[in-house]
Length: 289
Image (tube, rainbow, N blue to C red):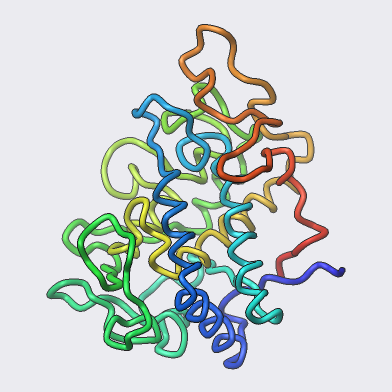
């Protein structure tokens, strides 16, 4: 079977936008969408918790989310095999007026009083998008573009180039404090305040705000478009660094605080029955336009 294509969301036709939205809504109606939300919440483990991390603040951040995104995409394609997960290039579509926030696609920003999204197909009032598992008591989709009370901006093309310029994939201590390596530069754990503290992947979550904050971020369908672009950037880095493979290849040595806390190259990444090594090459399944 030929590889299918994930497109930039700005290049989708009106029909393609509708088919994607309809498939997402159908998955939500079936209850399977909330299973993805629950999985992401369950595996959102911070590096201060002293336990195994496979989804965040760890080397397997990228292969874990590649598998997570692929499973979600397969669920959509079981509903409509013409659908793929588009990507949101936030270096270009970097304002509240960008096409992905249109009423026929993801809807816009939340209202000022409670950040509730009132436009588009995922607005609570439409009756098709009730938040079942979240980090707050809110039952509605919420957003707070740019966090006006403590403003953030979306990452730039220069920020992306800085991450792509990293020659190694990751570095010890394999967590949010790793000072070098592509993974943490892209995942975006920094120090300081505002744009300096949250880089790339993390800053986008915080720029959208609302439900995109924390483990329940899957409640906002933009999560998938964001992670499709993150996956594209990893794919680009892989092509530019053919010798810069996944790290660590083996578990950290005895006595290392990270031993047993991260997934090495051939370790399984729960809840999936795959290892980082299994997720390195997607060329037979999908490609990016």
